[in-house]
Image (cartoon, rainbow, N blue to C red; front, side, top):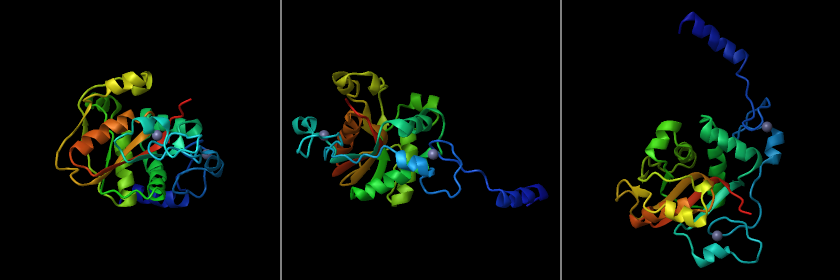
Length: 241
Ligand SMILES: [Zn+2]
Ligand SMILES: [Zn+2]
């Protein structure tokens, strides 16, 4: 170690790097695993209401499943999200996805890990919803891949990279209506190696769950390769009015 790096090392011990809340940038003095201040911890939009046992949509009736899942059940076993997609979570996810804030992944993964255990999911492998390679080139990273990797370290389940491939360039699901969303995704995904998921219970990770069409298409190709179960875990669930 040379003198400069030695002095820097001493300085970093005396004056540790300022730690700020990942949501509001306020300085925090004892960092918790979620990286946030007390004020933000109290205002996070956790999903606490009764939701559909299949897709995680809000349910106001006594039923266990929403109308959509009763009529046309998705292929995955269950999808679960930690938050509603709104307020500070919405802006944090946007930062994570579009502003290069990759460091947010490890904090979001902590929430996903807690949810995984709370849901008592039991999975053999973790993978994620892919993006098309063209989008990956322009954005530089796939936020869902980062999440899945960090989550895999926290819950000790093997992470599989590039297991599902986005073979077709699709339009943004958010810009489309329900019918268009279904047709937009036809043949959009494929599995890289047919043996990868044979008889496995698979955890599929994504950032946001909107209608579930994307998760469902991924679950279809994964199950077509022999996966026994597919569970879906996302940071946030869109509120459909
Ligand atoms: Zn804060
Ligand atoms: Zn449902």
